[in-house]
Image 1 (spheres, rainbow, N blue to C red):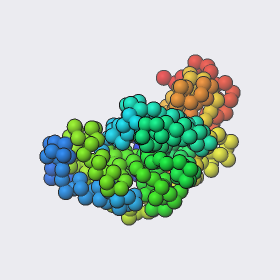
Image 2 (tube, rainbow, N blue to C red; image 1 turned 90 degrees about the vertical axis):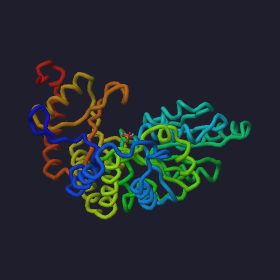
Image 3 (cartoon, protein in one colour; image 1 turned 180 degrees about the vertical axis):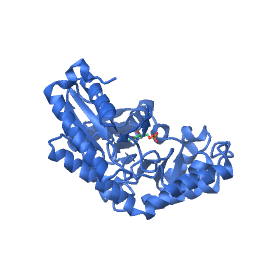
Image 4 (spheres, rainbow, N blue to C red; image 1 turned 120 degrees about the vertical axis):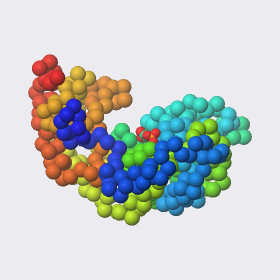
Length: 376
Ligand SMILES: Cc1ncc(COP(=O)(O)O)c(C=O)c1O
């Protein structure tokens, strides 16, 4: 990345498979724009905004992720808010993971019925909330929707999909998965975390975004045909909004084709992620509970030290990464959130490991507490 005129090694891009600058993707994006411009379609899908490309992409996504049908969403965030809003009514109860992404929280906020939150990835806690929810729906005549993520984007932990699906033996509920990070990266074919954990049949509604492994924009929801059709004609974020532009849809079809047919892209992502995580762990870094490619590096320190470290890395080592601090994580901790991609090299990994070791030493010595550590 070019930042203020200088080249930087960047670990902060949503580009897991390195598709952003893939020549075939660039060509497909450009051809789509050349043929249609950026204006088309000029209406919502239900009105004038449908096209054979939109429908084909939906079929391709459904086939790839293992569901009967899929529906395109203009944005992941709004899409998820609207999926939740559409699926439940005031008699239904939502049970959701405490560390859910903002789009899930905001979807839950729209819900007019009861909602119960369970402790993050804690199946016993989820069971307790399901007991409460079951009692409640016996009175209201509604149903229960459980929501979690396939891969939690901040910690890198996989959602416990297998255990949640097993709870269906004890309780009656439907399961909605936000697999923003898992789609394209997890599982034997990259279909997602449901494939990784071999629970495709237990997932009722699956959500993936194009903004991470596909380096595009937009998202999709996949499920049984009846449910997708219901969403297609009832989701407010889609019914009352212009459809995804033609060049994006055409470019997304190319991205999906590469994602499906070039397993070496996913293999490269995992090679980089494994080398990075092994190297960091060998050097004593705390990576928390990640069991995916998402690589959080937890350091002890205060907010101003976090700022100084990011600047030191950026200005003196040419490495750009994002830092997460309180209130997203507990006070006294900072998290350098690293996103490995197939576009990185093993040399990039080595350079980063060396820089992180030096920064760790400086942090321990109190260097970043001093104002002189601020390079700008
Ligand atoms: C778990 C999760 N869900 C949904 C989204 C929103 O996706 P989009 O960027 O496509 O709006 C994100 C992106 O940060 C995410 O991490």
